[in-house]
Image (tube, rainbow, N blue to C red; front, side):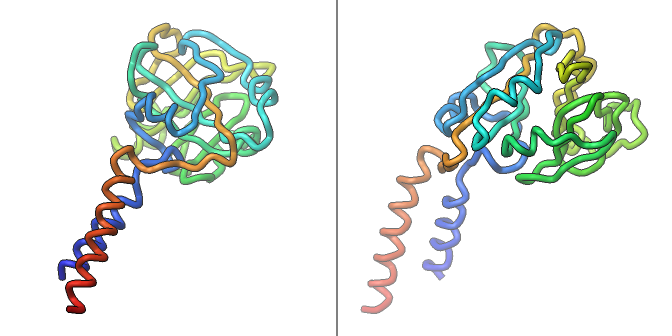
Length: 213
């Protein structure tokens, strides 16, 4: 029985915390750096930038993440999700999404962003769960939606939402981020998980030796 319980604990530790586990809420910025992510764009929701040009400037093997934070001094990303560059370069149809790395992504001439399921309501950004859309889902689902307005020439022209925080189009406090990391990088366990895993394995070996005695 002790061996089974210890095995379950070790399995839990192995899961750790990764930057590829679909959509992450309140993801520590320092942990993101430790996980190999680098910010290549940061700007207020009320500003604009050329999203297409930015993506085209990145290495084809890059992993790319979209993220938000409540302000530039926040220690965590409010929402964070990453996938391959090729996914973010894919144009989806109006209200269409593309599933990759546990997240549904979209990009068209209305908005760009991600969602935890395949349902979005582009009016013109994804307004699901905001009270003005045609499809209102659970609060948990609405709270994991990132949507930025797009315009002509592949520009991101304003924000709309970060989770349940909406109408951010002209907000100069909320921040948008694009991050990249080497496509060969691997997500790592939480800082203490490696040490605990080593202790767990040693304990499991000791219990097995004891059970044979």
